[in-house]
Image 1: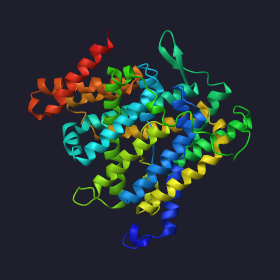
Image 2: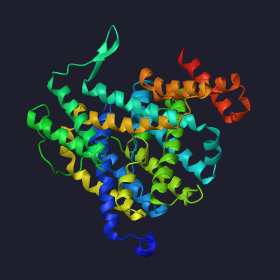
Image 3: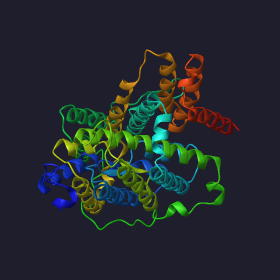
Image 4: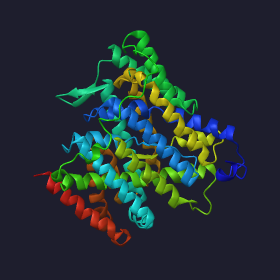
Length: 433
């Protein structure tokens, strides 16, 4: 084990890696509750999604640990699950089975562009500002969903949205969750989001706002409702324009989210030398493999988690950390009865706080250049306002070449961006009919 993972070489040991794996698991365990809730809104069986989420996290994390030897865990990604449920299924009208097929195909494409080293071309073609804007926009969208599910924000005929009833029990529970989670995170607790979610659920049960679970430990729920459902799709759905848009967006968001996460965590662990990521091909291959496996099990795109930085912070240096995290997700399957206490009010804080973390990407945008500020602003603000991640990306990618051309910077725009401009114009033209 020492030789395989290079524990001594990295100045670590099995105990330290195990503690790091547990820390990472606690920091990202909220996905076991949040993912079934979000995909449940798309009509999927929540208990099956719970199992699929845990198994995808286990397999993806172990692959990352064994193949790339990175202390980075994987699980169905936040933002990608929201795009899956609220844009692809509820917005575009696709079946959740077709959405799983889109995840499967996009993950396969990710594998191919990794093997053929096309990723450098794509990364260089998309301006950094639009990447950061997309990440921030997804954060705003996730936070908006959390506020909506909690009842903190409600629909209003006059103003579209308004403040909910802050005197009702469920809304007060959600507000408590946001406050206590914020306290944990601000105080530097590595698993602050998880602790906040757990404490909110406990308070909800004590006050009677949340029903008590019928048990704590149980046999694993059935995976049958979602397993291989990605292939239960009609030919018409496979060759539809909506399917093409879904695949491209899954690919785009997954690709850049993964690249940013891998670089950030690897840099924190001290792996990055001369601005280069060692074993990048193996890491990207592992990430894409996790996506393929997750789609077959029945969940939205599985990807690398930035919460892995919490494990690195306590000493995790090798892939053994990711392996330990994966094994803990396997154990978690047998605690499915606790899923019943995870309501919209309980998960609201997790969605909002994670949204805040993602929105920090806005600090990397040069707001003094209007040719940059306008398309990036439209990209992230359009996502929550149109309730669609795809619309935000499309609008930003249309505006960017226009503002760059009129500002005299046409030559600075990569040719691929002009191609994407045409594609997204056609995308809106198609949607309008």
